[in-house]
Length: 381
Image (tube, rainbow, N blue to C red; front, side):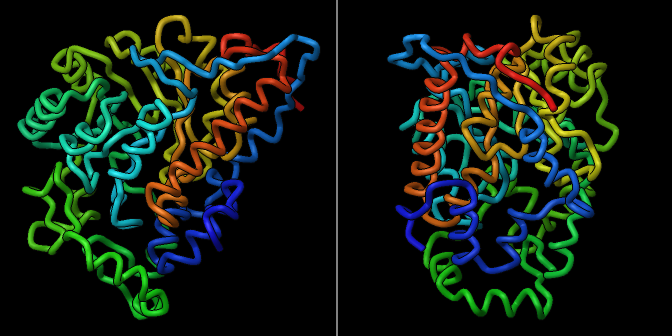
């Protein structure tokens, strides 16, 4: 399958499946427990219909949005995700360059495989740092200071991962970082030698934000031990309020799902929240971000920027979320599969398709700007 033959999310997913060893494909594709929430994330959009207006004289379409003090040319951004150079040797470098080309926001994770500083050199556009809260408060302060020094505009604290989700696909293959595969997993790597050749001919796999604490050679600790031993499950609102004060700028909580938590985020001075169930990878059976969006926008949307992610595969999905009041929409697997399949060219192809879909769909809706999308254009079944 060739990149030019990819026209949607499902095409990119098939191309990535052809290229990647099974354990790595399933790490991206998999979710927690029975993967019910993962499936519902996309299905939620199907229960909502768009009601277009015609004869509105829509010529040019303005897709730009302002969110957390950042101006984006598109109402979608590349959500920060871990371990990207495991999927393709370019990793975050490809995502940073593609986001810069399309004028949108991207993020680097605490578990990113390219440093904050290098990503900043690649793209001068809006960049977020996706942060995990550690038991070691000194480490938290050190990482916060480093992000500020690198010129990162937005701190994005993930709050739904105080322990890892039960991802059974990874257990079946023995997938872990560093690799400790079982026989089934090793066999799946053996039938995809091109990935191994590509992976090992390039620079060694690193975690630059954490390399003094998490060693990919297995000398310090594995990723699974990182989650269970270094992250602080007792993280509280007081802890986060302290981080917000220390950061002193745009601060976002990723993983908020309840109105009560959204209101608390406003109270402690956050400037944004991302409604997210972590792509279905944490608590299976949890509500979808799209289904919860209207309730939270009604409660706090006039005081804080509300974003959402999870299950977004089409421009129409984005328009539905924007119509409910989301300021911007995060993409995850939507760009990870094309990254795995074709590196920077894949991410650019995915963003181009999404931009074209949003522009075409806004014209068909009779809307010349994002601000014209309202709940009057929606009906729920």
